[in-house]
Amino acid sequence: MAKRDNDKENHKAIPTSRAGRFARVARMAGGVAGGMIAEGTRQLRAGNRPRARDMLLTPANARRVAEQLATMRGAAMKVGQILSMDTGDFLPRELADILARLRSDARYMPPGQLDQVMAQAYGEDWESQFYGFEHRPLAAASIGQVHRTTSPDGRDIVLKVQYPGVAGSIDADVDNIASLLKLSGLLPSEFNIQPLLDDAKEQLKDEADYNKEAEFLAAFGDLLAGDERFLVPEVLPELTRGTVLAMTYVSGSPIESIAELPQEERDKVMSALVELMFRELFELRMVQTDPNFANYQYNAATGRIVLLDFGATRRFKAGFVNAYRSLVKAAIAGNEKRLIAAAEKVGYAVGDEDSEYRELVLALFLLALEPLQEDAPYDFARSDMTRRMSEMGQDVTAYRDFWQAPPTDAVYFHRKLGGMFLLASRLRARVNVHALIKQFL
Image (cartoon, rainbow, N blue to C red; front, side, top):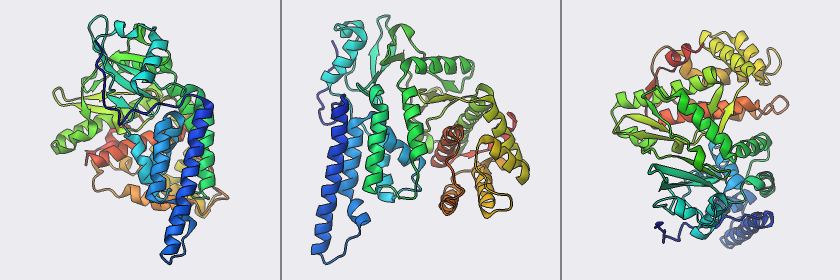
C-alpha cells in the first residue's frame, strides 16, 4: 500500500502548457508592477520621493518573483538559481537573497499530478510495480523530485521523477523570464545575462535527458568503484524511463553537517572532493558541473562521500583541457606572458598588450587561482578571495569596449571550481590544492 502524504502546504501543481506557464510570468509581472505602485504611494504619503529601484526591490516584490519561479520549476526556476549562484556579487543584494531561496525550495507536485507522470512512465497500475512508494519526496529540485521506494526484487531504491512540461518549455521559459528581468529593472542595466541564459537552456536540455544522466551516473560509478572515499548510486536501467531515473538508495547527511567534525576530517573530505574535480577535468574530460551543495552528502558510519545528481555533467574537448592545464602551470610558475597566452587559447578576451584591461584580467586570473599557487594547505576559512574577486569584477565592468562573455567551457568549469572553493570556505577546510593539482600537470 503506497504511503500518502497529507501535507498540502508544499504541494504545488506544475503548470504544463505553454499558455499556463506564460500566464505565470504575466501574473508575476503584474504583481511586481502593483507592488511598485503600492510602495510608491506609501512613500509619497510619508513625505518621501521614492526612487524606482527602491519601489521595485521591496521584500514583497522579491517574494512574488521567488514564488512564481518556484511554482513553475524547470527553466524558470533554473534561471533564478543560476543568477543567485553565479552572479550574486553583481545583483542587488535584496534580489540575490530571495533568489538564493530557490536552491533549497521544498515544494513538490501534488499526488494527483505525480500519479499522472508515473502512469505515463509505467502504466496505470504503476503502484503495483513498487512496494511502499513514498509520495512525499526526499528532495525537490528545479526539474524533478526524488521518491524512495522498494524495487520488485526487494532493493531499496529512489526514483527521480521529472516535472511534467519541463523539457518542452525550456526555451520559452528562459526567454520569458529574461524579458521580465530586463524590462522590470530587477537586473542592473549594464549586466549582460544573455550568455548565462543561453547556457541555462543548453544545460537544462541535457539535465532533462534522463537517459543521458543514467549514462553519466554509470560512468562515474565505474570510475570510482575502487575508491573507498566515495559512494555513487547504481543506475537501474530496467526501471529507468525517459522521465523517471531509477537508482539504488544511498544514505547520507548534508555535506555541510561535517562542519562540526574535527579539522582533520573536514580537510580530508574537502581534499578528496577537490582532487576528484581535477581528475574529472584532466583525466576524464567529463565534469559534473553543478556546484549545488545538495549534490554531496556524507555517510558518518563509513566516512564516505556520497555523490548525487549527474544531470549537469559536461564533456570537455581536449583542446580546452590542454589550454587550461597550460594556464594553471603558468599561474603556478608566475609566468605572466604564458598565462595571458594560455587564457587566449582557452577563449578569453584579454585586451591589447600593455593595456590596463589586460593587467586587470591578469590580476583576476592570478587571484582566482590563488589557492593553487603555494605548496601548502590553503586556509579557506581565513581567505577573503571572494570579496577581492567581487571588487575586481566591478572594475571589469568599466571596460565595456573590451569585455566579452567568457567561453562556455570556462563558465561551466569555473562554476564547479567556485562551488568547491565556496564549500571549502563553508567547512572551514584547509587544503593543499597545489599538491592535488600538480599530479595532473
